Image 1 (tube, rainbow, N blue to C red):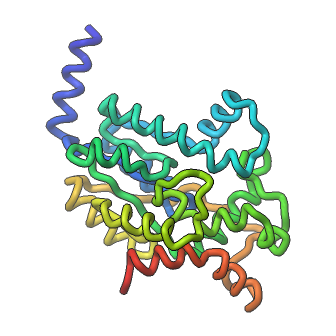
Image 2: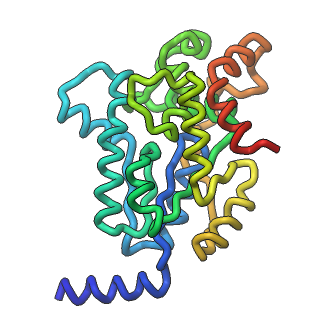
Image 3: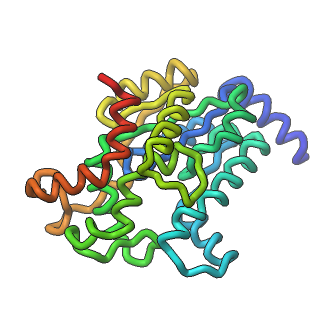
Length: 259
C-alpha cells in the first residue's frame, strides 16, 4: 500500500513538478516568502533546514557553549543535511544552508540552484533588527546598535554573502580577497541569482527556469517599534561604519550585479 502510494506520488511529481530545485535562503533577503511559495508547488516532496533547529541540534550533540563560533561551525552539519535531502530525492529544498561545492558537483545535472540577494547595507540593518527582536533565539542580539557595531558578531553579519557562498573552512578570513572571489565564482554557477529590489524579475526567472508560476508574499517582517534601526535613522558616521563592515558583501554584490 505504501509502496503504491509512493509510486503514484512519484508519477504525479514527474508530470507536474519534474524540475528539482535547491533554494539557498540568505537571512533577511525575502527568503521565507520565496521558500514558502516554492514549497507550495511541491507539497508532496519538499523540505527545509531550519536555522534554530539545526543550531540547537548541533549544540546538544557537541555540548559546546561558544555561541559565536558555533554559528559558523554548525554550517558543516547543515551541508550534510542538505546532501541527505538531495540523496533522498526531495524535489524542493528551501534551506538556511551555505553553498556546498560537493552538493553542486554531485547534483547540478538534476537540481537547479537558486538564491535571492539584497543590498548588503539594507540586509545588515534588517538582520540586526530581526535578531534584536528575538530574545531566546541562538542569534539574539542584546546590544544597542552602536555597541553591536564594535562586536565580532557585526563583522560576521557583514560577511553573510561570503560565508554562505564561499564554501571555505570555518576558520577562513571571510574578508580576504580569496574568500570574496570564491563566493562570486560560486554564485556565477547558480541557475538563478535574484535581487530583492527586482522581485518581478526573479519570479519571471523562476517561471522560465523551473516552469513554475509562484506568487511571493511577505513573511518574517520585523515588527515596527521605536528601536528599529533604518538607513534613514543613521548618522554619517554610523552609515560609514556599516558600509565598512559590509565591504566584503558589497564587493560580492557589485560583482554579481555589475550594472
